[in-house]
Amino acid sequence: MDARIETIRRSAALALLVLAGGCAHFRVAPENVSSATLQEERHVRIAGWGVQEPLITPTNCQGLGMATVMITIRPRDTFIAIATLGIVRPAVVEWTCAKERNGGGQ
Image 1 (tube, rainbow, N blue to C red):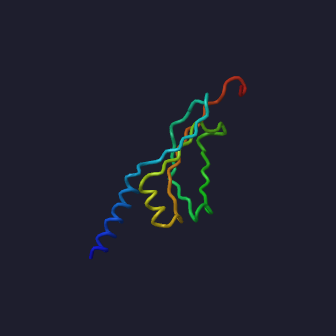
Image 2: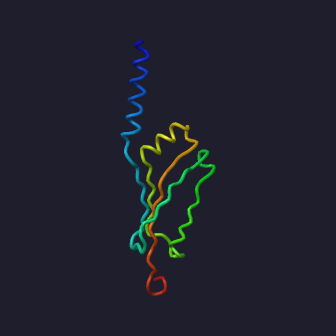
Image 3: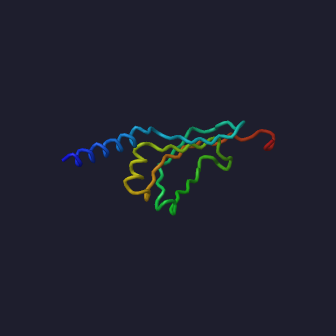
């Protein structure tokens, strides 16, 4: 009976560690580039340990490039990755598009 209680305690502690980890945000934003659009986002899933990576084509940027890109990994996403042994890894990708440069790209 004591071994069973200890297993339950360890499982609960592991679950709390995963869920209490909070969100992880990774932002890429070059200097001197201003956003021209509202932030867009896509929920994506990486499958098979990266074998099937999502390709996001931001149609709202109209060839001007991106001003910022942010990837967010939530506690729920981490739980899904652990539960599937890394086969599925959800994340949220957010971006804004760059303003057109004045003076012919200078």
